[in-house]
Length: 42
Image 1 (cartoon, rainbow, N blue to C red):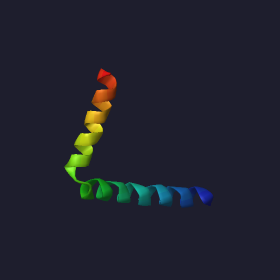
Image 2: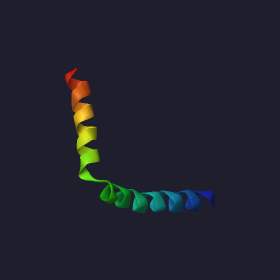
Image 3: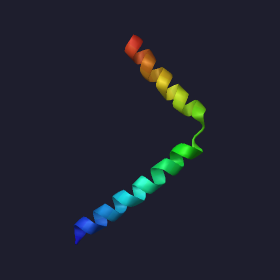
Image 4: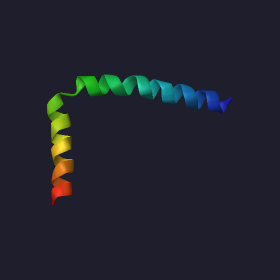
């Protein structure tokens, strides 16, 4: 059942992503927002 294997991988990724976001400092998020806004303004 390859489908089950893919589903398990996706679940593992979903569990890891929120942890990475929590570990990242808020400064990185603000930088991302400013760059996106800067691109839109330019």
